[in-house]
Image (tube, rainbow, N blue to C red; front, side):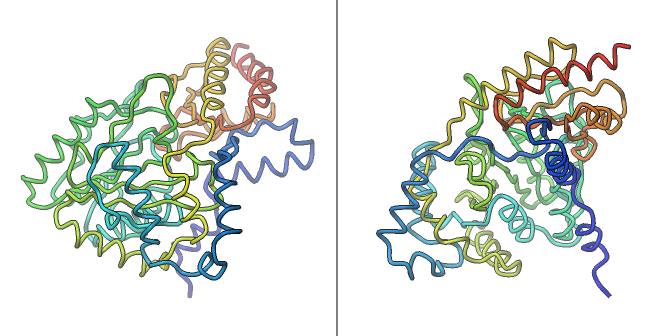
Length: 395
């Protein structure tokens, strides 16, 4: 007898991955240049040159046994110290290296954090639209997943709905800003109101409510947009970070958990994170890329490419009559489908080789996600296909 819930997860991919695999088959059949795959958030921008330089220097200058050997379970101390120093410099914080736990990417950061913070009977709240795997991670940890419906058209937090969802069983709240899939960035006003409510509820219920800030897109913002640094607004904050997007290293699976030194019983919470990493088999993130990201702390890829893609796509789609909110961050555009059923809309888009992800899995019915971390050329070539799709709905 096997675990039925694990079978269900393993026998059916997420809608994003299903579409990504479909795109690969179509590319093999008709040529990649004829398929406009906007399905997956796989960075199209190369890592900064410093990443290659760091890899080469480590491979040539460092002892191979040490380079490829185990680090401490929570990550190499010098690596954690370098990341800590960069974070303290950028956000005027006073963390120590022992606030950081190195992980195999943001997914590991989230699953470890949830395993560390929740027990049976706890509830974890997030806000629609949200990354679909949140549900998987929360329920795998044994907690109940609670969704606050999305607020249109700006995708900030609906605090009336939030107040109706939070209760004495709430152990954690997950936020994702800049957001996948909407590209929205929570304003300082939104963050302050969220933190005010959480502080009030902590006192009312007599236990911590952890704010888990999932931040793989923190650096990808446009214009003068600023992403509030959540630990500076709320004490009981745990940050889950990934270098997949900022340094264009998704396949290397490198990230960290930050347990703020202001968290209630911070040392116990950090120890629980270490224990959860041990229980889940996540001890010692890949050693080579721990050292690489330490050398590249605070750097980013050429994010101007995403800004160019955003402007090109947003302008082109709105001129065709599509409705969408211009994203302030990340590299996704949340498009209003031309019919109520977003799945049906995406099926029609496939006729023109446009691969778009229905918003249903993100708890955003009636919308589709377009991932524009693709080549600018692909967006330019895709516009006639979008025009044909728009024309179909004008008939």
